[in-house]
Amino acid sequence: MNTSAHAAIYARISRDVSGEGLGVERQLADCRKLAADRGWTVAEEYVDNDISAYKGKRRPSYERMLEDIAAGQRDAVIVYNTDRLTRRPIELEEFVQICESANVQQFATVTADINLGNDDGMFMARILAAVAAKESGRKSERLKRKARETAEAGKPNGGNLRPFGYERDQMTVIESEAVVLRILADRYLAGDSLMSLTSWLQENGVLSVAGMAWRTGTLRQTLTNPRIAGLRSHNGVVVATAVWPAIISVATHEQLVAMFARKAVTGRRAPRRYLLSGMLRCGKCGNKLFSAARENTRRYVYMSGPDHGGCGKLTIVAAPVEEWLMEAVLMRIDSPEMADTMHGRAIADERHAALAADLQADQAQMKELTGLWADKVISSAEWKIARELIQPRIFNYERQIAQLTGTSTLTGIVGNGEAVRVTWDSLNLTRQAAIVAAVLDFATILPGAGGGRREMDPQRIVPTWGR
Image (cartoon, rainbow, N blue to C red):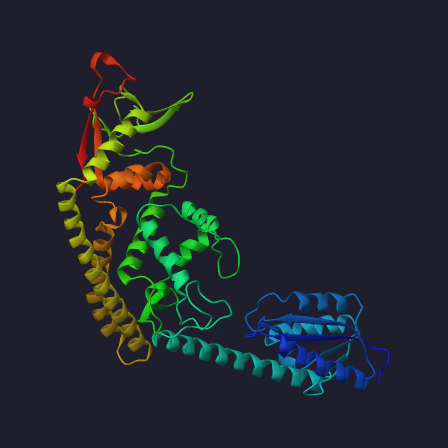
């Protein structure tokens, strides 16, 4: 017995549910006792907590131990069981090669006495590694199947971090946070940007569940998460109605997803500086007007050239035309015509909800169909026939949902133009532009009398109202 051995203790647990490292601590205690029984000095303890040895993930402490062995700083290794060291046969061979090169022959486990310095010990270690790899594969499949069954039953998936809006049990709604989520959803659909909403959260002292300030990416994930609509998803696909209560409606969820998708396509990222960007047309050539600044004056100009196609012969100062159209929009909000328009949009919103329900039903049917094929209840030919019937319906529903325009932007505004006028300056530019765009389709700017390029004559502005 080598009483002068400077041993390395290695401990690992692949999944630490409690986050307290109790499984690792128990391994270390048993390994320390074994070292004391053999008279070995423990030079260092190497711990990888909550890291799998089967999936090939990096294990920093394990790698550091190998470096110390290769450098001749350790002459013995103790682990609780060989599967704590590795569950991959190829990794076992690498470990043995490093130990042989460093002349480290003393390898001890709490559960079995294995000597890697002889053929019998290596044979046993290889068998144990192969068995561990096979069991890990089976366990992985069992966990995947269990996760799918849990999702299809509409149950939560566990986890240490609770979702915003719900208690740690992931079932009970925290009403104060639910109110925040509803406000965020309504304001985003009304035209507020993610940046302005994260600023609003910070100004009101609302933190994420991790106790951190909100980021736009985190907010995007939260608002598009089917969970807050009472839907259970698995691998990015909604598979069931959840057992927990919804915070927002399914229709609102579909609108949020569609709006995020549209904004991703447009690629608009720079902060808005002009109220009427994209909403003005040239009275000569009919092309769009572009925002541009000259010294300290904001302007809308009509550009020529191959990229724009305009005549390049009109320019108008931004501030006066923005103020005039803002007043016209607020007057329009209080008009009977706007009430009729909103009634038509409300009907469209009802149609949106019906389409969302049909879409969800077809998506669930497609999921069920895939399950039947996976369980070999139906053949590939039968699966293809059924899929070809369902997929076109899903595509059609998604297309119609994307085309519908909701009433969210003008909720609580129609008929209250004067109140909006009073608070107009307190709204951010993104919100102001969303209100204008919800009422105004576009405005045509006619050429100025006498060729004036900078004068703002109200007769030059011809609004075309949305329907």
